[in-house]
Image (cartoon, rainbow, N blue to C red; front, side, top):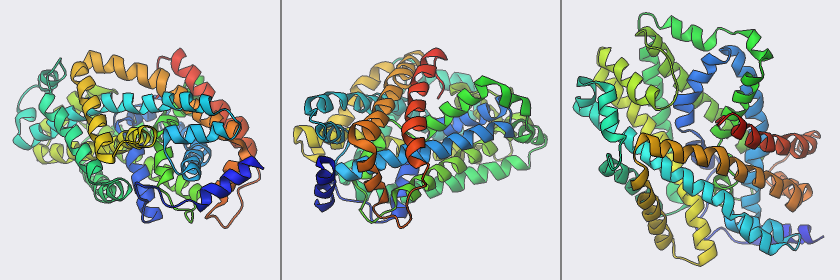
Length: 451
């Protein structure tokens, strides 16, 4: 009865003070903007080929479907139900059990994960923006790619571009919340898909590109018998969808009651998968066409790719397109990470939106200044993505499906939906999805990172 009353009370509330998304499509694009990031671009192509090619897609798509339908949907629904972001939602869920103090404390863990990953992400996107500028001027392609990269990936080596990334993010969020995030993603995400498609088409016509397609799509069915294939597919899918127990909750709080959350969750997962496949098609055929050893991480994005473009006709043009699209993907992800923090500070400390935006930007820049070297930001991101973010996501899953309770969240998932959820949904959500979030956290530590 208490949960039912809370659900009814939330339903009667007005739109979030930060506004709401104007349409389901705008909401999905914003969520895709958050989900599509560097993991899609520099890790997915390599893992796809390394762990069985087309065979890897089988476990990957299974996990994408599971995490999208049960994970994304749960976070969206929890945010919409509570009509607030991370800190408010955890307090709301625990208060339903009379554990208000626990909710106040636990909510900070996933929020710290969002802020932590945003700090490191901004450093890396600063490198991307510098590479875009180096492509436009031709400087990056006229010198050794590793030297160009190492100029920036040192202590205090990329302050102007790092600041520019945070500045753009702040300007968009300073101008508004849900409406501005929606407008920005409606522009930036379609451009991302178009630009990456252009690079992928160009790669198709490169002599020797077929080896790249073989690496990606010729299945090695024996890989399905290897535990590592399933572990890496699970990790890639989990982190690709930005399931953090934080960021997607705040986007859910900006969603209207008439929107079909399970449908929007699957659409987000689908568009994210398309982005990952486009990245694979844009990167690997070109890598093999020029006889360069494929790899993942910063070396692929900042050294291997520029070397390819430097040998390609009209390489300067295609390099600029590539790094501009990567910058778009990164900045739209930052919108979500920053917004999770900003909304929570507005809610918890009664800050004005502008004060919360400026404080978040200042903190991100202030800490990020001291981790601009490759070694420093690498260690920072390892800690955040191996320990903090998966732990926060696990707490989110347990909080939503067990503390708040399945019955309450199911009612929210059904709001705006004409069909009932599949009968198996309850079992999968509570006994498969939640358990897998625990497994992701543990295996991330064992493997020193799986996402």
